[in-house]
Length: 150
Image 1 (cartoon, rainbow, N blue to C red):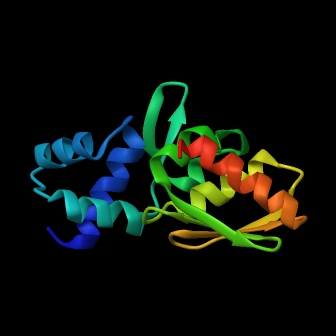
Image 2: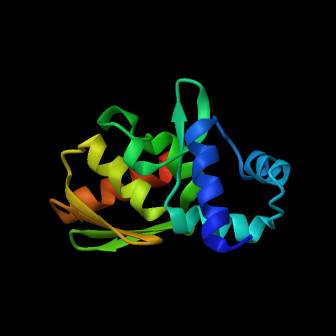
């Protein structure tokens, strides 16, 4: 099966079922005759931009466009899973994440609407956080580390 066909099968499964882990997805793909390694599946999930979020039914993969405003995962859920490090200078903090973790964390920070933060810019594995002051940056870094359990 080609990569586009495999990714199409992944999207169809995510749309039609509650899938909470890569292993669950791998088993479902195998039932369709699609054998895939964990590394390939991870790359496919990243390429497709699928997000792993907490819903009323538990954690599951979703297509980001299907998320409503109220479906933004919280920092309490995301940071322990995706946090790598955070540091900063002056009014800027730089938060590093695991691969593909920056966008969901930047969105969760924006959604949290902390008054010390003017805004964020999220890349692949880096979030730039613009704070109102150097003191605000220090407080934000301490809060993020605490939420991440570091």
